[in-house]
Length: 307
Image (cartoon, rainbow, N blue to C red; front, side):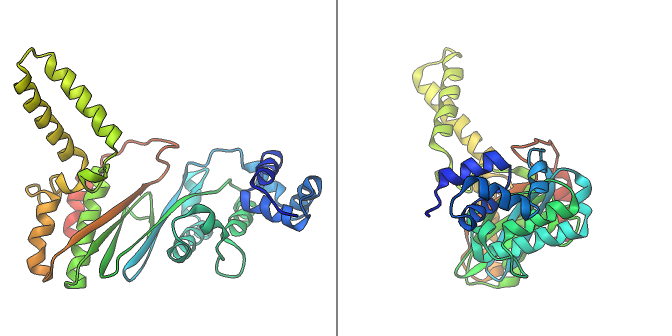
């Protein structure tokens, strides 16, 4: 019997088990809903299901790199305590390594084989029962370049490649790889500190830009100045907005003088070839689940000498 998405959804809502577990249960029982529920219970997944309603906003960000390709994932748990658990740390690290080949799609990561034979989804479910906390693989991302590097940075790492804030920066260049990686790490530290919305102005959400224009225009009109002056005021404020939220337009926190764009241009002579910023990925633990305000700028600037 063909297993449909609606059947998986119904079983998830009924049992509280994970998506991949529900899909497997339905496949094993030829789509029989009651039999699938019993299958989940006999496999010991009901214990994990009981925990699935509890909020998992702690955990770890994990990064894994392999040449000109790197991945970052967010594995959530209920308490900060579990992030110091060696089994949980190993789980996060190995899932990040699996993600390098599985790609950025969450379902593909969960369905990918975890070292040892089981899927990532099954391994997480087993870990829930073993460690005793609800866990959830929330997201993953992969970045790669044909020629160049994907630099990685973990802010305040709790273990190699593990922490609460991870960044990937992809730089395309045929220049010196070691020097390119050093530059990429500095840019990644900058991204950790400033949290830009986009790498370039073209990548900004057009709707967000339009909203800013509308606000700036209304503010300028309130000044009572002529239309020609208002246009210039809006242009100036929009330019300032770009300097605040666009990575290449931001002042580089490492030197406090050049823009990131100019810093990359300046580095080309030392690297020995043109450099193109392909993009960046920034994962902060629990963002969108539990917003935690932290000032990374000062710490990153202080740590830049150790990059």
